[in-house]
Image (cartoon, rainbow over the protein chains, first blue to last red):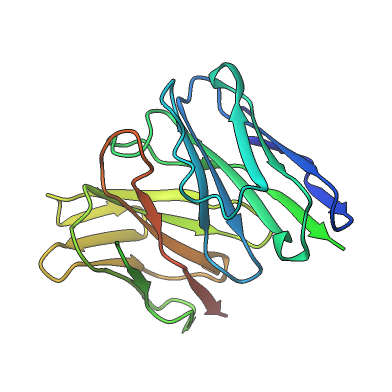
Length: 117
Length: 114
């Protein structure tokens, strides 16, 4: 199937280490989103890429978080010097045309469960 | 900024009944309003989208209404089944370019009791 793929599905890391989370969006989708979801909580917006525009980074919680999207396709979310409060499920989603476009809903991956010990 | 409230964190109903979930928002009405279903350990899955100028949308046992005067969307599941048990999220698409304009509610966990 050609859905959104995220890797790894689970990641356990020690406090202070850096981690990289990967997202392969659906081919041809111009928009890509990263969200964070803590246990039993809603979706927390992190960052939004739309085509070649500058990304909307307004949701990143601190400068330890960064993301890039290479060639308009694969995206990597990097968390430096991880803290225990970073433990959550990190979800990636892509859509054909992005927010504000009719009938362009989000397609989510199943997330990366990050545990910082 | 937009505030989104979904009724009660959890809703329990008997199998066969109609489940009604509520999504209320403040400020400006969105261009589109979307509903997603999320199962444990999985990412949300898109169900239905309704436009600002549409009153109602149906898909099989699902029905969504959108009242911009009340600033509310209702999501109905008729003849509910235990397999409908999941968390349901509404999302408001405020439309625009460049920045993210999609805002999610915190979700309602629905349990359909056999």
